Length: 84
Image (cartoon, rainbow, N blue to C red; front, side):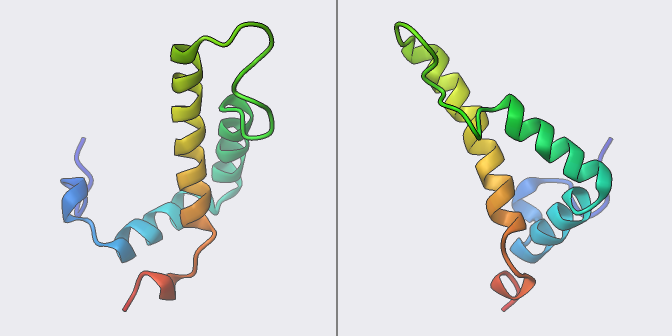
């Protein structure tokens, strides 16, 4: 289901993206989801695991971790960083 004003990611301005992330994750439910994502995607633990390192599994885990880092980075900014 398309969201009005967000048909394609390329049409979203940085200010719109910032506002959407703030609206989504700066709610009690959004904070619970973000906390779950942080735990599920190794924000507070190593992605290497114990024993022999499987480079493919590690790449998958690092991809999930990178997505959470992106969300956290956007949430850690001010609107003025995006609105010029």
